[in-house]
Figure (cartoon, one colour):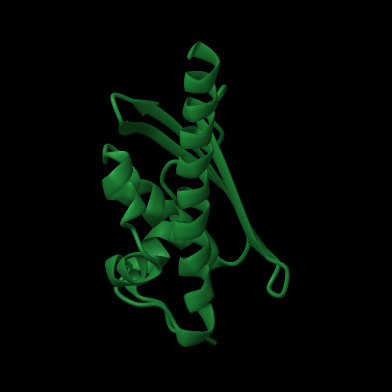
Length: 131
């Protein structure tokens, strides 16, 4: 059985920011069909900052802990800062992940990035309509 840090266990047992945002500004979904983990991130953006970040994760304890940590790391950050959250920085914040669970940290960062890209593409589409 993998050994998890106290921080991973804390985020697994008490995940932060679980849920859905009504009318989110962006949605990002990422999954790994091999392990069955699925993550969906919802974001609200105000003045180019992540005002709210929520997630729904179907997966193992590590996947839930990663989602919780990514949501905490992203909250209040500018979009550019949030896009700099990497799988390695997530794993580091969680004080490490077992090698066979490292793919979970990829999913969390990727799902967040997809939510931001979704928001940016919607903003661009609205800008194109106004022009």
